[in-house]
Length: 165
Image (cartoon, rainbow, N blue to C red; front, side, top):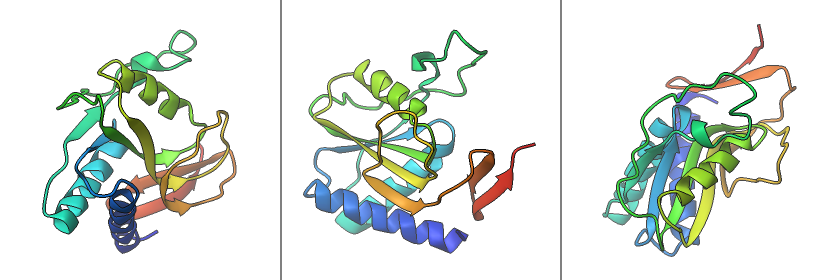
């Protein structure tokens, strides 16, 4: 995907979020640290451009909620900032790449530490398959089937595929 493709996908996902939730009144967008933060901000900006009103945007580091926390060395990557109580809101978790689903599971646990949302939805730029948990995104920029040993990188220039070292 080129940078223009990513930009178009962000606008499309913003429209889909608004359509599914009948506007932005109860929507809150939360970007997963680190890859989902810029995408969450871009989706929130697109929602504001479409609706003329902003939505709360937060960031979430779910490291401490991972199910493999004691099995391998993990270090919190960045700051969690949930700007408003998610209780009663539709929280749209945004990440760059959906792979096994374990990070999303941890994110759902983490969100519940801050309140009880009406619903949690998932937006990802790339769904690469290889799920280990029964998690699927509500909004997808691109389904990109990959081999298990490939790396998917979402960056300012678009989406790149590479080989593991």
